Image 1 (cartoon, rainbow, N blue to C red):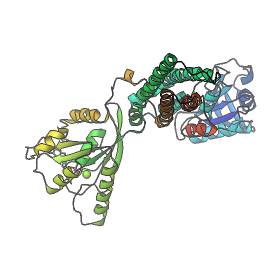
Image 2 (image 1 turned 90 degrees about the vertical axis):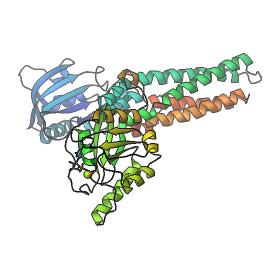
Image 3 (image 1 turned 135 degrees about the vertical axis):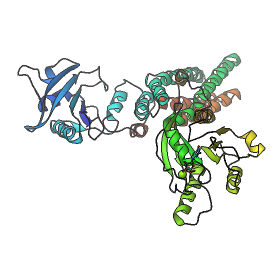
Image 4 (image 1 turned 30 degrees about the horizontal axis):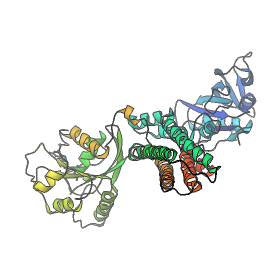
Length: 458
Ligand SMILES: Nc1nc2c(ncn2[C@@H]2O[C@H](COP(=O)(O)OP(=O)(O)O)[C@@H](O)[C@H]2O)c(=O)[nH]1
Ligand SMILES: [Mg+2]
C-alpha cells in the first residue's frame, strides 16, 4: 500500500485565501512534473528541484489551466509522511482546489483515505500510534488546555511512559521465560519476591495512567452541563452570559424557551457543553410539553446541573420538587437576580450540602465565581498545563484495563506458585495490550479505528 502515491485537499472546503493540495508517495515528484509548468523558462522541473524549495507556476489538467500555484518540493525523509511530498498552494475556494486535485489525480496519484498521510507517518516509523492520535486531538481541540495536552502527547510524553512500562513488563517476562527452559527447577524464593515487586510497580504505573482517563475525556469531548429551573428565573440569560454572546432568546414571558439549545463554552480552559432548557413547570400546550420532556431528558443526561433559582422570589413548589429530585446529582445552585432584594430562603439542609453561587445576569456579578465553582466541581486534577503531560483516551483506557487484568492475574499466579507457563501467559497478554497503545502490537482493525477519526487530507 505504501508503493502508490496519494493526494488530497488538506484544507477545509469552502471559501478562503488559500487551499493546499498535498501529494505523498514514491512518485510524488513525477506526478508534479506531469501537471506543473514552472513560470520561468529556466526554472527546474519539480523532480530536479532541491528539497524544501518553493516554485511559482501553473497546474494544467490535460492542457487546461487549473490554477496558478506555489508548489513546494519536500524530499524524503524530512517530510510529514517520510515520503517524497509535494504541497501545492492554490487559490482558496472549493473549485480551484478541486481542479488542482483532479489534475494531480490525472497525473497518476490516487485519492487519499481519511487520515492516510498520518497513517503513513506511523507506518514509516516517524510517529507511534499515540502520537498519531494526538494529531487528531490537536485538530479537534476546543480549548488551549486541550491543545496543550495534545501537544504533549504529540511530543511523545505518553509514548515514553508506555514504552517504559512495556519494557519493564518485557523484562519480567524474559526472566520467567528463561526459567521455563529449566522445567524441573523452581524459581528461587528471593528471585520470585523481586519479580512480585516489579509486577506490583507495573500495576501501580497502570493505575496512575488510568486515573487520567476522566480528564482526557473532559478535554476531548467536553462536560455536559444542563441549565435547569422553572420558567423566568434567568436560564437563557445565564447561557448567554456564560457564552459571552446572545445565543438564546431572553424574555419576561414565561415559557419562551421551548427547545433545548446546546453550545460549548470555554470555562477556565475546560470545554463545557451547556444546554439551555425549557422551564420545568406544568404546561398546557403541546409544544411546551415536548420542550419540558426534552428538558428532563437533558437533565438526566447532563453530568453537571446548574439549577437556577430566582433570588428575588420565595421558593415555589416546582423549585422544591426539583431540588429534591436532583439531591444525588452533581449540581450547583445558581441564585440569579442578586441585583434585586433577596426574598429567597433556601432550606438549610440544601444550602449547607450544595455549592451555591449568587449571580446577576443583568450586571454580571458572581459569574467568575460561578465559573470557578463549576471548574472545581468537574476537574479534580491540577489545571497547570505542565500538569497535563500525560492524559489517556478511551482506547488507551480499554487497553490499559486489559493489561492490568493480565498483570494482576500473572502476579497472583506467581504469588501462589502456580506453574510458570500460567504466569507467563497472562503477562504476555499484558505486554501486548500495553503495546497496542503505541501501536507496537497493532492489528489492521485497530489502525482502521484510529485513522477513521481523521478527516481526508490529514
Ligand atoms: N433583574 C434581573 N433580571 C434578570 C436577571 N436575569 C434575567 N432577568 C430577566 O428575567 C426574565 C427571564 O429571563 P430568561 O433568561 O428568559 O429566563 P428563562 O425563562 O429561565 O430562560 C427576563 O426578563 C430577563 O431580563 C438578573 O440577573 N436580574
Ligand atoms: Mg429561557
